[in-house]
Amino acid sequence: MEYLHSMLRISDPDASLRFFCEGLGLKEVHRMDSEKGRFSLIFLASPDDIDRAGGLKDGESPLKAGLPMVELTYNWDEAGYDGGRNFGHLAYRVGDIYATCAHLQDMGYTIARPPRDGRMAFIRSPDNISVELLQSGDPKAPAEPWASMENSGAW
Image (cartoon, rainbow, N blue to C red; front, top):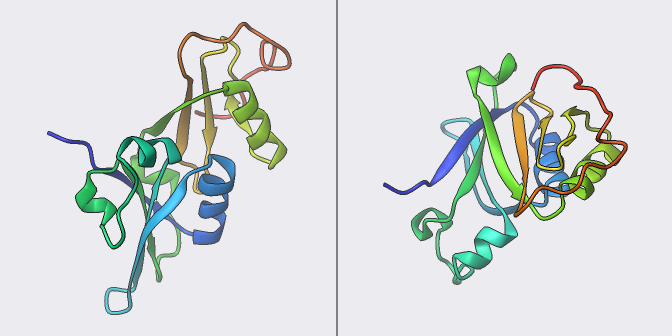
């Protein structure tokens, strides 16, 4: 069995791309718009996963390359989704959990579960999808402001 992607239903492609691409650093690797089906599929992958896969060859579909991805599904006529349709969370390993959380916080996103332990944090996307961030390698030493920061909302 091979992991391919996780699908998230989104209500605003621009807001979601800002969060996942500008905030988390993912790259758009494939997009498909279906006029007949009235939906768009936007596939994202991390630069590190793209590198591990040996990059993408010209014209090669990331779907066939086995690249782990997030599929953002935008149904053009949907009025919205409540609570992310019972989706649990996405998880990403990051090189510096404190820098990643600070960057997202500077962009205006709430760190729902701060990385008090230097190892794990949770944030929410514009569509209320929970995203877990895990420190690569050993946890970082506890540091402020994270060490004393309380949880904010659900994660």
